[in-house]
Image (tube, rainbow, N blue to C red; front, side, top):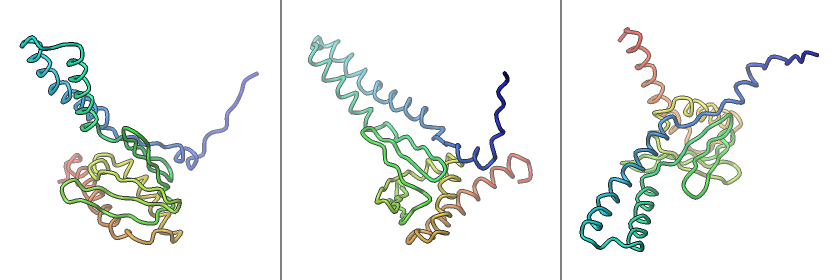
Length: 181
C-alpha cells in the first residue's frame, strides 16, 4: 500500500527554518590554528632546549586549550521566534517574539543585548548579524511580533537603525551583483 503525505504548507515550512552562522566553522578553524601556532613553537623550543618533559608538555597543552577557549567564537543559531548563542559552557536562548529590551553595547566590538519576557538574555555580536542575513531576518521578524504584541518596551529604535544598515547593505550588494550599480 502506497503512503501519501500531504504537502507542507508554506507557513509550516517557514516555521521549520533554522539559520546557523555560516562563518562559524571557519572562525573555529582559525581559533584552532592560532592556538597551535602559539603552542607549537613553544613546545619545539622547549624540546630543542632539552627541557620538555611530560608534565611540561601537559602544561603547554593546557595553555593551548586556554588560547583556543579565548579565540573560539560563540555559535549563533536562530529559528522562528527564538535566537540562541552557544558559548563554551552554556547556551543562552531568548524568545524573539517576546522581547522586552534590545540594547547596543560596546564601541569597538558592538554587541546587541536582548532580553525577553521570561527574563532570559543574551549578547550577540553585530558582525554575526551583518554576515548572516537569514539570522537577521528571523530576529527582525520576531522583534516585529514583539512590537505588535506590545512587549518590546525599549530598543525599537536600535532595531530600526540596525535594519536600515543591514537591509541597505544587502540591497547595495544585490544592485552591485546585478550590474545596476
